[in-house]
Length: 128
Image (cartoon, rainbow, N blue to C red):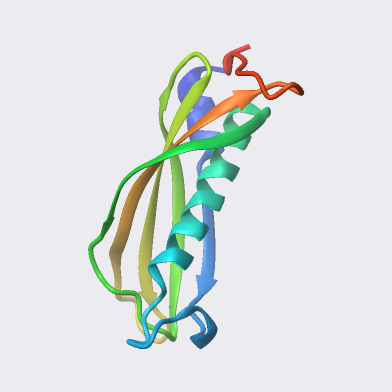
């Protein structure tokens, strides 16, 4: 399988409803809750690409472009953007989808870096 095919097959999409227990006093999704969901989607994407143990080593610039209101649906999309010897970079975007209309817009975008590790927690090559 080519690198491009592995990247395409590892793309991860998850949908969530934004309920009041995940929102702040402005009735929008907590930034920390959004970052946790993004890290989870990035982890799944990196693992699906490598099929190895992966750990988060950094999160790059995360842009909160729009608040995410309670009562909306969000789609998180994880895509591999760079593959190194032991590390992989995954971009995660969160789009807001209104429950009762077709309107969608991008709300958050960020990148996460993961490293593949062995059973002794030492970095190992991603591309076997």
